[in-house]
Image (cartoon, rainbow, N blue to C red; front, top):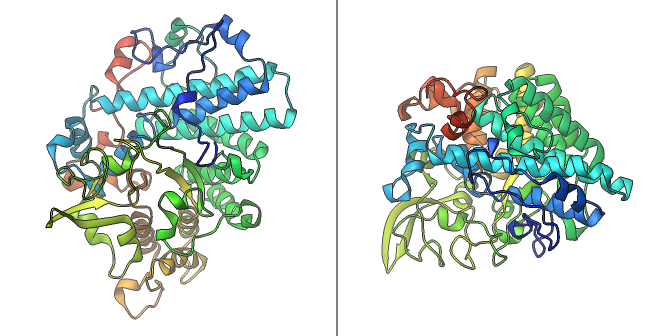
Length: 496
């Protein structure tokens, strides 16, 4: 992906040429669009992918898919935060389907289930095109290997989201050339999907560079593959493998250039994009034919006029809960950089929580420059602290050091084994788990992690009991349209 003035985006997703266009059928166009993997003409595609420039454009389409509504434009923060106790819908005008996700009344026909499914599978189809078609292209070998690595990293990221959201999902690793091929795909076991994710990330790590020239900042790197692989191992509770990979990210900082930014506030905002703490982020660019991000408008309270966002409509989505507000410790520097409790409109102060991490002035409604950070170095440090604790609690051991690096930057006192302040004391493995959970909640607030953290640590049913969660809610419903299209192969998740 490219630097802020050259960002990869939606305008490049459908590559059309006059004499032999590769026609990508839109998802949902008919009931034969199995998996919502946009089928393509085999003859036209074979004629199209001939040069390194063709493959660069095809890879651009994979990056561009991350901007889909079913991916990082909307779905990931809805699933990652709204589904959790971090945020809520406080105004019904924000959307009935969003309320259903928030309060666990969603069904197989709730729109976000279909949008998330189709957005990810369209991206996977685009990644498969690159991986499959590039083999026959005569181009520089190193560039070819790098493009394959980028496509595999992106495919792994999309499958990681899918398997965490839906559980068993169809594992498609080749191009779908005609609608009938969709009948072949049922739901693969979660473990099979994870094995493919791991294989893709290992391959990506082996072929990607640590860094890029300034004009190409934002592309997937070796460090991004390592960090995501560490998170995958952590999610699977493979503590030894997770620890090895996360420690590798930390130890190779001289090559990756990753470090904590001096201040928490300095991590966020348009001028800070792609900074030294950022490992991978989805690039957005306003004023570029649909490449802008919606977050500034999405997260502004309904009724706030121009007080919170100066251009466009405030949509009232992803509103921080009162519990989230109370979660911050006194003097935590992260709170002011993450959320506010009021706004002033026409001289009148209104008490209302809202997210400020993605503040800015859009060029138009839903058209801002704000990127979405998927992975950052602070996440790696906290994951490694968690892994060390799972491998064995050590009073004031290395796990404490990594946890306290994050707290120190936030302006907070360190936590220790024998601290005189009971609120800063950690005396057991179980207490350290909760300390990491708390730190991840406030450090990564509103970045789409909370729900996935609660599910992978088996804490969702306990923490979210007051929201009405039931055991089957840890997975989202499979879109009913997919079950109806291919009932012999696609079954519904239990409980829906």
